[in-house]
Length: 304
Image (cartoon, rainbow, N blue to C red; front, side, top):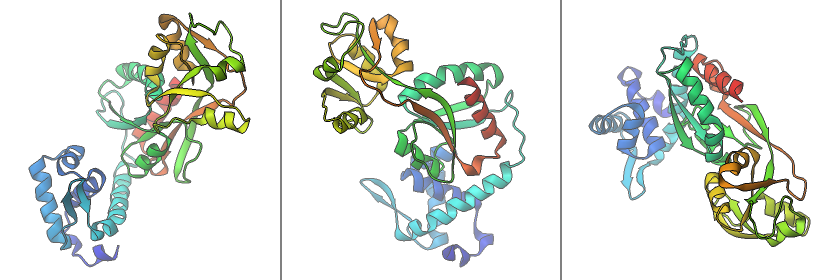
């Protein structure tokens, strides 16, 4: 905070710090402005004032966007914390009225959690909070934690085996993996033996875009191996591929059962035992007492 202490605080417009924080996140003048509701010219003007205030370029245009200077990097965390403290002070006792609020919540979801959560949540909001808005951002277990820490999302919902001490966690439901293939599969009928599982060609769903998943690691521990024919980054495309090929997949049960009937798929127990997994909701502890945040968390928990 030394750099900030050497500046006349009376000369600082808090809105300039909001612009600085948005630029640190977005690395792009137009996107930073959109994030905080400013036009591109207004954001550029604010950046010019920030440069005068701190006597530094702060952000330099590169092929990869507006990159922060060393001084901006030093300033980034103190400024972000200042804004969080101001936000917390202003919203701590602010009442939240769902029926009339137009609050925008940003929620991090995978396509699996979008599929499971959003239809129920939006139906609920239509009745109890018709003006509340939801912005969904795509996450995986690693990106979700980073986005929470950067204040880019209000909630992250997914599978999080590990998280930091400043994250709060609530388990929403338990899920298990099952084997899925088409009903008229050439070799698999009503049940699947380990030999058939290992001998089949598999679809792997992996946001890491890797040909090796957790199932492969599990099998390797038992000196077993399967053939992964294709890796896709999204859960919801897999059932449609299965319906038209002899490929098989290991999927979350809720997704599989939803698609099974109209795509004519078999949903079978795996030929080996694996643990169930928890789908959880994570948020930053700074939002514990935010009335609107509490309301959304309670609504999601009750729906699941």
